[in-house]
Image (cartoon, rainbow, N blue to C red; front, side):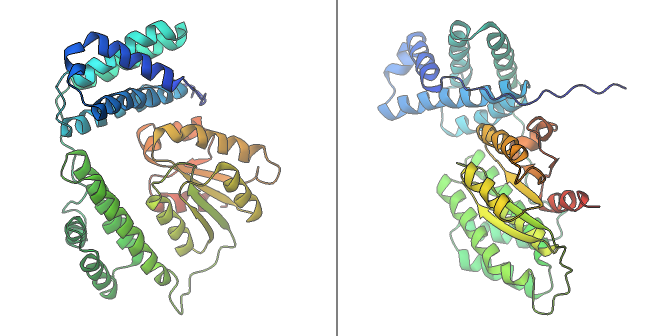
Length: 356
């Protein structure tokens, strides 16, 4: 059977400020009574909602696939519900935006944005599905994960750490703590935020606490007397510029280190040129790039192209990961990467496969 050709990633940069402003003005004209009662803060929030619509829409345009935009609409539907907005708020903003784009965009973009917005609006007509929990009974460390989550949500970091430390002392491997405790705790915290059971401050507190716990466990990655064979390979790992969600890529770096790789972890929000320099200076064999927010994909694409074009880095193998790559299966190919990994374990497997 002939495989469907994969469209390469083509960056799209719409005039965000102009189009969002036009859409907001159009919305205000159509819904005078609603806008009349909005506070200055609510008006700014509405304008920002239009900007978010456009950000995700242009990434769907860039990959010629509605998946990024429709997934965003599903997310927005849940989040907007926690803001106690009128039921028709989201579809009415989408309609206003579509009407403006019909006037402002060239025919090709106009046709595709109309299609994507209609598919996004159709999502709103579907029954609202519950987000499944990330901590389940199938997880052998579910009790540890649940306790960690509950204590962190209440703000008791040291009590949460005591449970983690006890599990490690009892013989639970550090890699299992990462995969079966930290990862589901972070996922469940995100779910709590989406359904209104946790605020942004709580989510940030949990994330900061998990990063602290990872730092405390780092010395146990290579305990005294460890016989882990060194592979003689180097990984550079980090998040692209403006991307602050760095827990996942930190786990990736630690898993490579546990597997015997030399690692150079640069963290979140690393400027593109600095990351390229790090790959060159460290003579990296593999670079792992993470992007959680879809609107950072242009930077991922730029980095992949730049690394492939630079004589000092063109041999490096590139692994990408993060939420957009989870929802669009071939996105890693579209941006030109060599592999995709959905978690730290998969990243190590992909890294080693390059050199078999």
